Image 1 (spheres, rainbow, N blue to C red):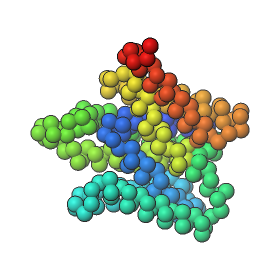
Image 2 (spheres, rainbow, N blue to C red; image 1 turned 90 degrees about the horizontal axis):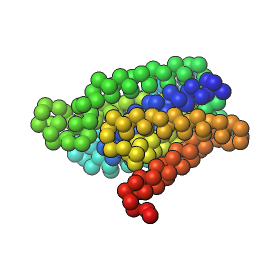
Image 3 (cartoon, rainbow, N blue to C red; image 1 turned 180 degrees about the vertical axis):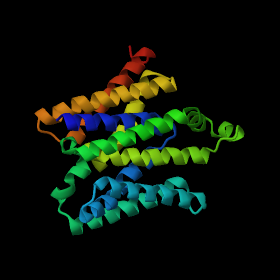
Image 4 (cartoon, helix red, strand yellow; image 1 turned 135 degrees about the vertical axis):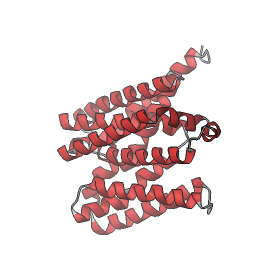
Length: 261
């Protein structure tokens, strides 16, 4: 239980730090694409008998590179490129899954199993959390400027494209590390809901990131214990708690603005 709880908290830390940027930059669809497109890498890792993290990471980076290349050459728009690559990779993963493994073998990857976190998983999660925090801390002003005013960022010598690629790589790392906890299907909630809920509480970027971390960590702890004692799947339990927090924060925000009597 302690190992699972620690793994969940490390996952929430990585996701929550990026959550605000995902919401601000409108990258929700990209997060969904990465979370679903790692499936073929996971299945191949399972077949080869290696840690599922490495196969998922390789698949996610291929997705990021593929989307970037297709959109940068002007073949189609970025949203279309995301849809093409996302569907292609996910379909390939389902095809592999139907051929080389039973549904029970990898169901915890699809839907999450926080109690299945191993010591090796904890090390990987810790490293990913460290990379994400260091990456955002070292480039905070640049990422913030490029997120809210790309034209101004370009005018002062920053590269919005480079900043976006940095966020995409961090997003890929975070998504892959979160798979063990909440699964491929539900990982998107940890990347979006904390930032969306925190944005209802504050308008200051620094505070939004802080509140995102607090909200995600709280949801992990509560969802973890609910799933354990009620014998429920960990991923959906965590996401339901996150959703409830968002609803309450949205209602509270509207009350403060006088929209609800």
